[in-house]
Length: 375
Image: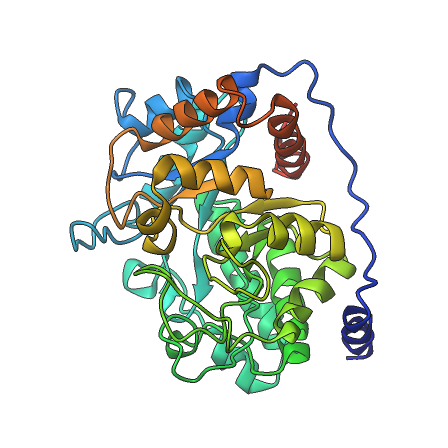
């Protein structure tokens, strides 16, 4: 508890220390390869056939990551990428075999209702963050992280988009509180339980991802569906869990929120805001690791800004990986489309090659942690 109270006061005076991560040189890397590594995409299919769109995204456009889902939202179907242990393991193995650089293979395995590998498909029962926080048992949070980590490792998934470190500040929040995704309404408790959960994931060599920066817990709307303004409800202490975990070097990746807060940026939501991503998360909090966007197809971004402008603004703001779930709306070859847009933005001088190299360096440093990865 004391270390998190210390961070609380450090935050109040804006004097947090940096993670001190080292950079991996990218001088010899091809620009097209570096751009591809900045894209993570979802896809349809229980397998990875050589002529499939996702395999072409990997082999031709060199995308750096994929995300798995158990349901297809666009089709309102329970068939997407997950059937059982054996099938998922074969899928992830085949995907990796097609990649020159090992893929980040991710899933939203938070526990409770947000669970891509669920009990009805033969996977272990999981607890929500809300249940863990209410238990008051940090060992239970560690065990939950370890259990989930074991499942992910067994099926070849190496990134968990968890834990959620949003502070539960609005009981009517449809996307956080209603789904029991927050550990607590107390940022210190959130910090403690998130650390324990991360330790559990790390014990199984799974990369964690804190979400959703700078805090989605006070929102009254769902950014999947449209513009979400938290200007009047958001509090600076919603940043405490992020800052605490950065300070003790437990933040592997951080996912941005699509929330709008005029006090932080008068024009753009967090995912597209240089003030939020570079100004607060990088400069003030000292985070030097990989920053990934929330799904760029969510209406709070795609509905307001469109595909190309959203991509441009997110990279300009400081995001390293652009996430396209390809599930709310399905588009074959979406990974290749995103890579082409990024190449076009670089060619037109709207994004510098140096900016691409910065993200590539961070991504490759993270990928060095993948089992048996060689670079």
